Amino acid sequence: MVTNQQQYREESASSWERVPLHLAYGRCRENITGLLASCPEAAELPVPACPGWTGRDLVAHLVTVCRLVAGGAVREPAQIPGLVAEGEQALREASVAELLTEWPQVSGRIEAPAEQPVARNVRIMTMDAFTHEADLRRALGLPVPADHPAYPDALDLLASGLSASVDGHGLPAFRLQAPRADWTIGTGEPVTTLRGSEYDLYRSLAGRRTAGQIAELDWNGTPAEPWLPAFTWGPFTPPAEATEAAQAG
Image 1: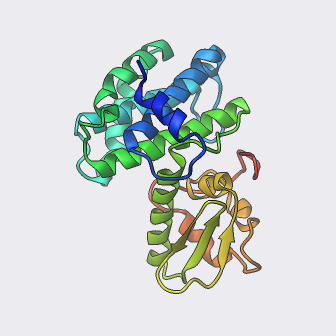
Image 2: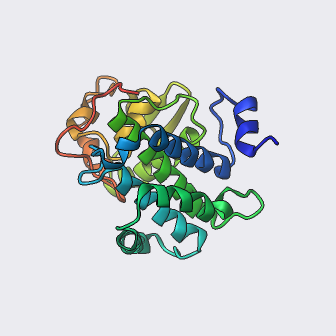
């Protein structure tokens, strides 16, 4: 029997195009499960990008988010932090094995193409899962696959959030340019261009790079400082100290 995930791998192994969210999320879940199964000690391994978390804590967070979205508990973005904190607390005694057993059971509705909850919440949870998959990979010293199906939509979602933050700060627009995609960040004609690999741009937009690291990216000769405050938005804040090197992906 050929699964949705297997079919996707065979047909679209190296594309950079938006794919159904249930496939992208399913790949994140499968990858994280595989990483923890192949490296049991990762359960207690610190995850530098998530201070205070171990691999077990990362999975508990993802199962919590999946429970909330699949159950339709999230109605407004402002609810998310409180609901997630409560859910993680409820899972504080669960083992990695228990969490990995529950996750596919809870995610069944998310990963079934005929039964999709609110699309925006699924976009957010997929981006969150992909971000934490990258966090776990960095903790294990492993790269993120360049053809990961979550990349296009997740990076697009982060670019949209950064764009709103640039507007909110009253800053001029700039162009965000990756090898396989680009975006106008902010409103109006871009006054400069920020270039980088998909990985470096993703990690910068997702609060995984310091302000100094973001400033060291290719800003086309333009000082980055005016835009740095905009990289703090939503749940994302650049760390005070670097947790990973640039060009790591």
